[in-house]
Length: 127
Image (cartoon, rainbow, N blue to C red; front, side, top):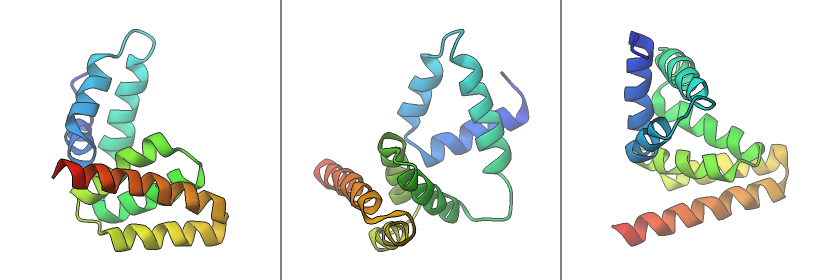
């Protein structure tokens, strides 16, 4: 796929998430999964993430709230790394997860904190 929205989407997707993860997901796409990779990159990243209404940092924090509320720890860990990479502080992330706990239940917040601690520990160990 080689349209402008896909190209811009790939650039933003790689910038927000781990570029190696993104490149691997695209490289390993087969006839079954390739359409998903193309749509996610073009529509989500190339259309939604390029809109001017919210800063990237705000979008990431919103995604962390939604992914924790939906109990999607694998995806949340990707966005936690992206959050740190794109200027979100641990304090901001903590506040998002406390807000999630208040509205979505404390077990949801506990899972989010657990995932964040794992990412923070891994990030500190790699530094």
